[in-house]
Image (cartoon, rainbow, N blue to C red; front, top):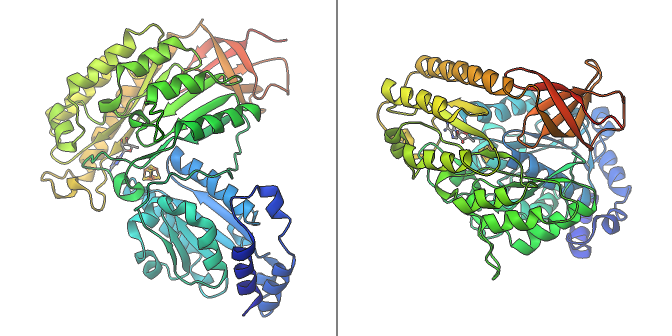
Length: 488
Ligand code: 5AD
Ligand code: SF4
């Protein structure tokens, strides 16, 4: 048995990975480095790379970014050390996105850069949505990959790492058959003010274009008790902003007997002492009920922003997409927000060039942008994804036409944002100070309605994480600029 295999085995026997990080990190012996060094003496290159070092790169959405925080926490708890370049890492991980083809290609181009490493001892792992989607095919396409695991298997990560360290060549975590959410005590958060909490994983909808139900599996809600405990812990640790995450947070349903729905959870999280801002993403219009708006109206801790992806302004296309709402039903939800007690920024996602989308359908999307006047939007060209229903629909649209429609949407929206942001000049808004741009002599703030508000303040340091009132003096399509009202 090699030293590494011995270490891997003894680790299984002697440590429960659920123990607190600090107690367990003590046991990381330098011996493992020695064993690795001695095994690799023929290569100076490998002697310089400490074993148990890892590098991770994350692609895709906020869910993925937060999954990576949990993966990093788990690896640190397992005694790994994080490095900031793949060249210095013994284990290189890519947490991948497959929402559109371009996102998927990124991981293969990264892996391509390292194909000469095959057989030299460096370990490569593909995590996340591409891993789930492509599965073991990844080993054939990139033979230097040793680990392929989807997000539903991250609870098994410590065990998968043991297999990897024991010399496993094709370690996989690909089962979607789980009713667990990735609920781990080890989360490495890099933002000291805003913390993300996953409340629901997976998705039970079947939008015709979307790969997520195949990559993230069925819906699993965490218990309200575990969400609340995590939120309280974060407040005690000094986080003042919490963002609740899920593919469809609106369908959150407490899996414990308390049975809270999403609106109840919002109210309770907003009531935690020390939490000043609560955000959530993402919503599905079908499950976005009035009780959510009522909860927001009742509690200003719930931020003035709703992201409500519409995808298309045409009821015909929405039906083809299997979105489960019509244009009018969507506009009814917008009306709730526009007539609410507080004013909410509304943002959305749009897909152009869905199969069969006619010029008239596209015009309906443009009309919708005028009707709603979104504060911001993300727009995408339809991208055919494996396994999805839309693949077999007739009327696929050429890329140039999708590109043309995308440019029109973006130009229209830019004009709307210029107009809407200009209306804020002269107003005062509270910002959470998130950064500093020394070159511009400005601080970077975020408003409750999720706008970036850059501002001047006499202080050159010490403002990060504070809440300040800022008067808006200028506006652009994507941000505002101003000066701090409170300078003490
Ligand atoms: N093609 C283009 N855009 C897509 N999205 C999801 N799947 C696809 C696809 N196949 C977009 C949707 C979704 C956002 C996260 O990504 O607009 O809301
Ligand atoms: Fe996130 Fe969706 Fe990309 Fe998966 S496919 S990482 S869920 S955006």
